[in-house]
Length: 204
Ligand code: HEC
Image (cartoon, rainbow, N blue to C red; front, side):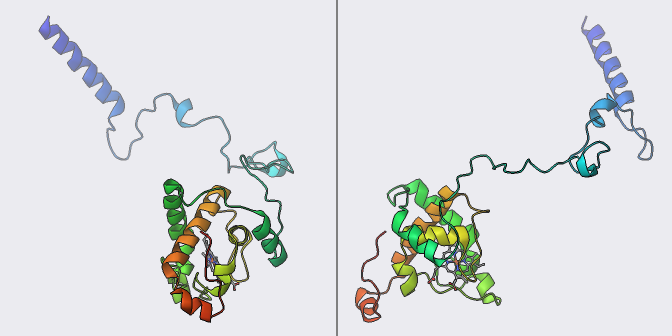
């Protein structure tokens, strides 16, 4: 009985080896179910004889919105940034540790190349010739409301590009949270700030 099983296994193994093991590097192996290897469907980037423009991948219908997109009820520009500052409130709180951690990640990935890991405006890109951003504890940045910074990340400001396409809204708010953390770390003693005419207290 044992011997029979062994012989059977050996036979099956030799059949499998004949079918699946490539006899030589220059000879094509036996192709098992070729329809699965070469599908009849058109590939996304291949041309298509019947579709518009001869392309397989078609543009989405006009007015299509990406899934989960929420439009911001503000336009670009400084006036709109100020309006966002007076009306928008950060939905994530500084007490939310996960949100703070995520804010730090977002900042390190998207913002630190210019602003530097500590927010001093000394990121690698700025060191190599990109117009350096002011430190995040500049008078102006300290006076900015959360909603204004959210607007700034969404639409950009002068030399700073917009990040709405790269960072989803929830993460942008978390980055705002982290900007506040950095500002607290960077903030010089209050008397220095007061002498510079900056607000002495920063709302987290
Ligand atoms: C490509 C470089 C670059 C990146 C990346 C970048 N910034 Fe900026 N940022 C700038 C520049 C340059 C300015 C100054 C803009 C100006 O002249 O008004 C600025 C300004 C700011 C200011 C206002 C500072 C002030 O005093 O006016 C804040 C706050 C800020 N950025 C936050 C962020 C955050 C948060 C991110 C990541 C989501 C980010 N930035 C990513 C270049 C960048």
